[in-house]
Length: 263
Image (cartoon, rainbow, N blue to C red):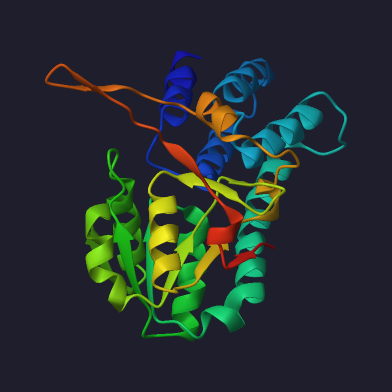
């Protein structure tokens, strides 16, 4: 299963996509190799080791593990397809709850790449043809550029900016929308680094900050900042012998968040 191992390694090392998109990629990978139970069991171990900080992926591994070990009387193929279908229903449920609130806004600012946001923006566009989205490019991986390209395919007016430009264009913004990789019990969230900067900027300019994320991203324990730094990948970069830090995720405190909508 060398080919399968290589394909899984690409998913595990993916720093462009958010947890919902990674979940989608894993689900499709498992569908492709559903006939090899031995491989899937090994894959589950690798996924838990590398992506346990994403609640949606942890829940998925438990779900698949129960099916493989006969704890659920369902075929793996049908279960995985049903799982993908239910994810689409989740996006619709989030938008249904948030639509009345979101309808007041036309120009929004976001950051990074989020499958959840893309799906909701697609629904939002149908109810508001004038919707405009500005995306921070999200250095150093620049996954915001990928996000902007996918949003533009939905025929939504889309601009891409550097994070450093946020303060300069904030007067054009009606709303900041963010996804979340974790929603903490205290109402704070974990998201891509740069999100907190946008939330602080919004607080200063009295612009609402809305979180759109599925309920399976909620975790029960309050995570300290030190634990967050230890848990998430911190990749050092070296530029001309100068060591720099690249913290991929950060906590956005609940006092910086206006509303959180889940399914």
